[in-house]
Amino acid sequence: MGKPVASPAALAWQRLTTKRAAMVALVVLVALVTLAAFAPLVAPYDPLAMGTGPGLNAPERTHLFGTDLFGRDVLSRVIYGGRISLAVAFAAVLFSSLIGVTLGLVAGYYGKGLDMVVMRAMDLLLAFPGIFLALAIVALLGPGLNNAVLAVGISAIPTYTRTVRGCVLSAKENLYVDAARAVGVPDGRIMLRHVLPNVFAPVIILMTLGVAWAILNICALSFLGLGSQPPTPEWGTMLFESRGFLREAWWATTFPGLAIMVTVMSVNRLGDGLRDALDPRLKI
Image (cartoon, rainbow, N blue to C red; front, side, top):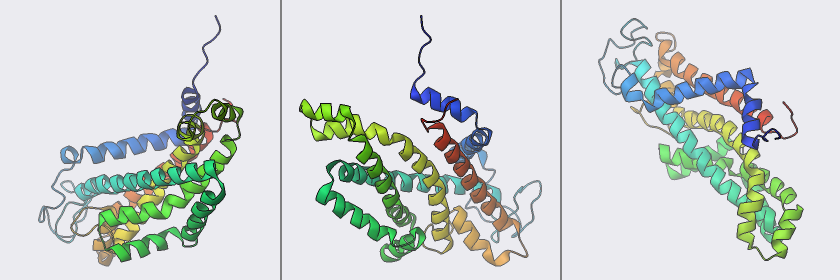
């Protein structure tokens, strides 16, 4: 008997496991997500509790990351901050990918006037840098995490739409799509069963890299006072609250900043590994 043929997912996983940097990044991300998920069990203090130690106390045995101005434990706030920052980043990416994939799929499949309308709308959004568009949306809707998620999600929609549209324009010319049309398969079924699977790989890569972009932008909005509001333990908000004590209490900004840096770098490295692993032109 011949050797069983591995599935595309299994082949992609084999290629990913050969990327040492991507696997290290995956382990780091799993650890961060685990800490965030089990924050009530892992965090040594209540992140909102004041007076757990002296204000602006340097890192020591009972407060490994020190305390902030109000005596709140920085380690506990960093752990809980990951819970918020990661959750809102994933929500923003999910929102933008669902809308972007739908628009790109419909525009690429039907083409003509619908394609022109959708793509001109995407060009209009792309005329503004992502962070400035997000700032404008939040300024219009008002500060808050929900509005920050909406703003960051909307600003990322054009990337998904244009990418998916390009993939659909190529996929819909395949013979099996013509055969499905010839036997009377409805357009909706053709798009979902025969065209959509061809865009999974690029969309997964975009979503992975989009998480890093979303974290940076949501933290930036919170730092500017347009996202999470104090005393919520969110990384951007923590930087905002401690920005005036850089000389006296370096730990109050260093550890939230390191959390952002490590998370974004890990997501980017994992995204690079996924891009190589999901490329069908690569061989093990």
